[in-house]
Image (cartoon, rainbow, N blue to C red):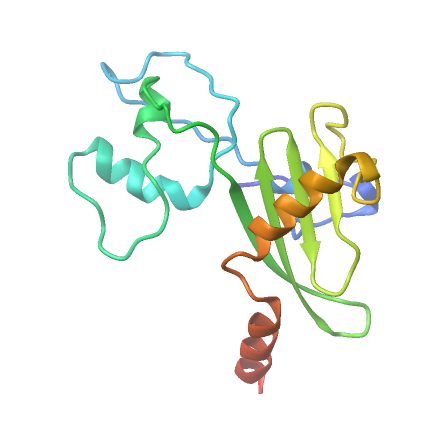
Length: 169
């Protein structure tokens, strides 16, 4: 399970993209295939767990499943490099408005997009506590735009909002 904020950033619940709530440790054991004690700092997505387990079991991919196998990363042979990691949430603003949210993490950077609100951009290497958003920093404009484009590439917050509104009616 993932963590609780326990007052960090003034929050007390899990529905946030700050690492205190969003970061989940993943432990994998595969004797003879994965070196005991191997630690990987690279963020990955829980959506990759299913494809990874199927690959490790030589079961073949699950048709229509999202995610990628982490087998190469776990065994130390992955040459694909760091991949973006995503998280999504539906929040409610103070007035009850539905707010689709998406986070993308790539390398040292984390971008938080809450539709209709200013974005957040954190350099986790320099600011692991996520205290100083760099979204308004002109020196970070290129990385901000790259991660914003990545977050919105296959995700439409207006569609999410319409779909959820219809479902709730």
